[in-house]
Length: 442
Image (cartoon, rainbow, N blue to C red; front, side, top):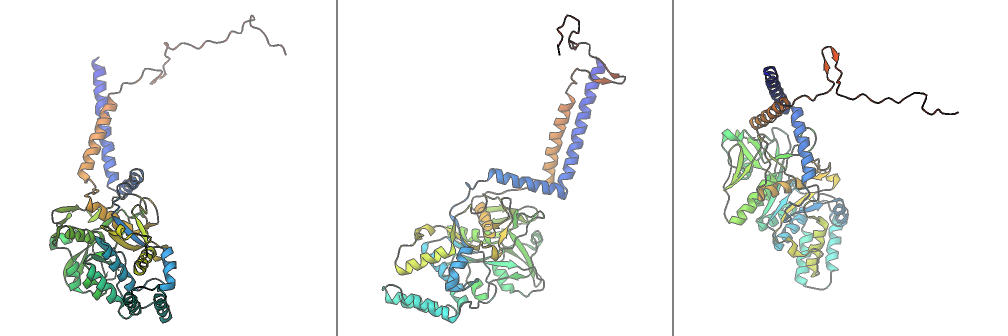
């Protein structure tokens, strides 16, 4: 009896040791790039299984520049990029309709040049003359504005941006080192942080800012630079990018964060106190946690087109209907209280990304997902190595200890001298071959 107890104790210890060994091996694998890749892939699977779009905030709307819009507007406004005054007219229209904020996922980094020939401008003016009889003054103002589209194209967008008081423009890091940048513009767009914590953010090189007249009119600027993981999908975004200029670090917020700050300020009616402490971004009393690498992990609400989408050309049609006094296909009341992102989804404009759902996910919807998380305090965080080690050690230790308590099942198990016959098993009955059995006649 004592020998049996000793044997069982040895089995328990052996099982416990084996479980702890497996836990240590699992921890070592988890810390390798292979383990991180497996974790990322499992996260992708969880997104596809658990996210169906029901969490999406429908007050966030995307105005997309799709292939349909490029074809429809080419005859009137030329090929992409369209005149910036056209974007200005849209900003004015959306502002009149009562939107909360407008964010451009489009960069206006170079001075505008006309892509429309003079004869096309004249054709537009003739279309205005052909409109049904109405307010002659309104017709004259519209005609003059079309004719002046290309005299101050950037100014038209800047004036609309300034008048809206809620328009955010984009900047991008080109990766080119040594580029000369306006330090004053960087300071105006940057988030406050001490030099000690600024190093926690990824560094960006060669920031491309909007032209001076547009960036001066914008409520805020936000970067749209994003980097995919090594296996392809975009699972997070640097909410702050560090840019060093003239010996000073500037932390530039992402487009989604700048939009969130704008919405917060408009809701509170006062400027927000924004700061970064190395692990999280603080907007007044709202905390936005970041991962160890400075990224905010994207909690995708679903695949592409989870949020409401409206075609750019359809908004232009609604603007034309308003000028003509007609009923628009899109009710202007639809825009009240909405936050609008304007971005490209056409494949030729090269702003499609890989995400856990598909390989052609619109980049503009990445920014929408991030803003949705901030608005609803919905964040994903990765647990540290210590917690992972504790979970593995406890789980595998318990499993190993439990395995050591299992008793062997009785049966014809082998011994050192070979197989032992279990005499308790009945021998199979053999058929009789005596002469009393009937024979087969062939």
